[in-house]
Image 1 (cartoon, rainbow, N blue to C red):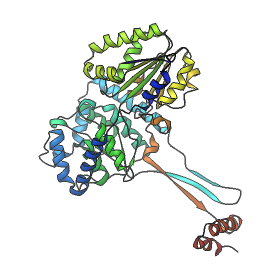
Image 2 (image 1 turned 90 degrees about the vertical axis):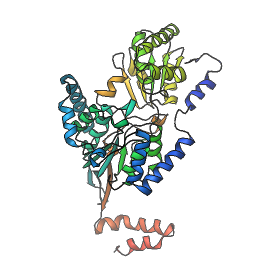
Image 3 (image 1 turned 90 degrees about the horizontal axis):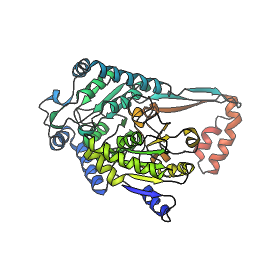
Image 4 (image 1 turned 135 degrees about the vertical axis):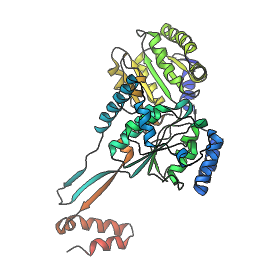
Amino acid sequence: MRRLSTTDPDFERDFDKLVADRRESDANVAQTVATILNEVKRRGDPALLDYTIRFDDFTPAGEDDWRIAPEACAAAYDALDGKLRDALELAAARIRAYHEAQLPADRDYTDAAGVRLGAKWRAVDAAGLYVPGGRAAYPSSLLMNAIPAKVAGVERLAVCTPTPRGEVNELVLAAAHLAGVDELWRVGGAQAIAALAYGTGRIRPVDVITGPGNAWVAEAKRQLYGVVGIDMVAGPSEILVIADGRNDPDWIAADLLSQAEHDPSSQSILITDDTAFAEQVEDRVDVQCAMLSTSKVARKSWDDHGVIITVSDLAEAPALANRLAAEHVEIATDDPESLFGAIRHAGSVFLGRMTPEAVGDYVAGPNHVLPTGRRARFASGLSVLDFMKRTSFIALDDAALAGIGPAAVALAEMEGLPAHAQSVKLRLP
């Protein structure tokens, strides 16, 4: 774990290194993924079978082993403990309500020149959702991806999720039932992304692929962007906590560990103006980490990538936060709004001492699929817009064309495109 202070003479150099640190896939991952994508594109289902056997240690024996039936998802939902079912339903309802408010409105108007202009929003025909398996098999991720797609109006939702050694995550099945997923395939990794993008015969291609995954999944989405739309290229999880010394150090330590336990490459950063508090948090991280069932992962993440930054005044924090452009930013102060107003780049911000990031992962409502690796400088979290596209339209009558057509002719002739000019000129009086 690194300790930095803005009063150190080498702070700018050390902070620049922190900002530039890339905890993502290397060239070897990219080459391996390219090979997998090409094989699935070329060979289809046989390649998918080979990779499923190799990477998931699972050999589908028949058609029923490839696709999980809706009846199995319904049964998993019915078998849930009542308290857990209530929690999933609460999460689904809040996620749905938040994303329904995101739906964009069509436009249709006539301007002063008499030209009718506008745009219509339409959902894509089919979306592919990736839900990780193994350590990262989270029903919350399925809800966060499937519900916005359904709200957008996507007609076909195809989910791919790996089932290592044939093991099915019953909570993922239950969430699929609750979200109204149409297809659930027992396929994972880069090969699943390739199957959704290209189609394999068994799996039909989709238009957009969303959902988190490991470095191979993220790289597959990056390489396939353009063949399909994607939500983003997501890297390891990250959290930045801005906290003063009036916080309970146990709370802040737990917040930092909530991301550290995701993956050894995750990053947790604390910015505080209180050196004694920083030491208390560091101590409580050690104590709490030792008690976690995920301690091995969280410990490595904290040791390798954790950072505590001490500033002279928390007013310095927003500028540092903007350079980091973190996935999650907590502002645990008496007046979080004063700092929030200066933060321009963050995936999602959590305001006040009683708003831990973890509540946003499950039941708050906004999407937890967020930009990582400083991509919050130019990207946003998943929304209904990731499953929609906008088509503009134009309508002119004689008078409108007479008003603006000559300018179009002049510009076309200036650009050396006479057919463009002629197509307008022939319609003019």
